Image 1: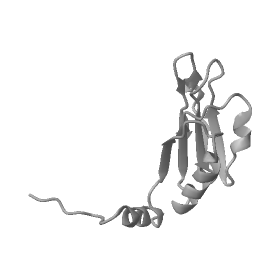
Image 2: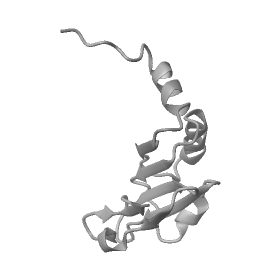
Image 3: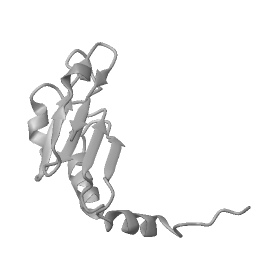
Image 4: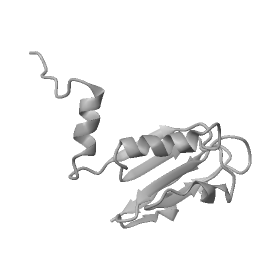
Length: 122
């Protein structure tokens, strides 16, 4: 039985998702150094194209303690876990301020091997 295509192009899909306020919209990217070569500006441009998702999750931010404050996005609360003991790693989550969100600290940690950022959205 053939499946019916819901969208004919990626642009049609993006238009459908970004224009619908009934969905929680989440954007994820392995950014591989948010500080490198204009990536933060490129990210903000992409978010505008996507009509600003409700939650943005970035991995491999490569930030150190205290640097995350340089990467704020208006109307979002920033949560982060950084890797201080070696290069790479790091997670940032931006959550729209209208969402009631807190760090779930019991499951948020940074070790030599991984970082975990857990959030509770009520």
